Length: 259
Image 1 (cartoon, one colour):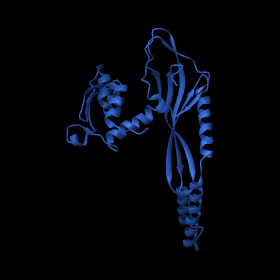
Image 2: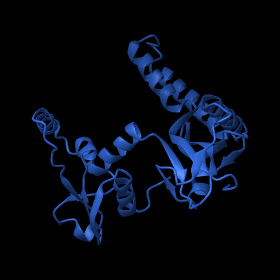
Image 3: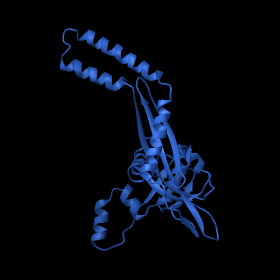
């Protein structure tokens, strides 16, 4: 799930958004934005409002992104983890590209059915004295109910696209998306329950020790607002909890025996 190559990530991202890659050399990638991406990234609402008002097409900007540290003084946006432009792109992905629909790219000359898979990437967060995150990717066949773990890695061997290949058609799901998602939640709930939870016991023990120390400090004023505030902060920090969040997901259509 992690981005290991910023240049490849940016190239794939803008290609998927139908933007032209003008050049991509030595860690400097130049992109011709389309109107949609200019609106999303370049912060020119008044320009586009004016263009539409006068009935013109508009002139989307070009964007130069630099991922090679040796080229960081070149003209363009220096991109690294934490840079404002990358944060903007990641925010856009998180808020507006969280769910997708993709089709396996295949070359056939006769009618071929593609089977629907619900794919969801989850993040399990274990929080107490320490915090640990775990990413789990699940795929569920929406016709026969087959479930696959590590789904994102399984999908890497396929070429996926946003349009369906010639001569292909999609099968209608027998399992509703909500029902399929609830099946995934059940699997993950069972998985979490089966984990070893010594970390949670240690966090509770530490919480009790911290509260006792706090109460000793406020022994003459145990009902003070400040004491209650600090105890609430300790509880929030150390009380063990497990949360399950959806990172992203979508429907992926694959050949019958693809997996």
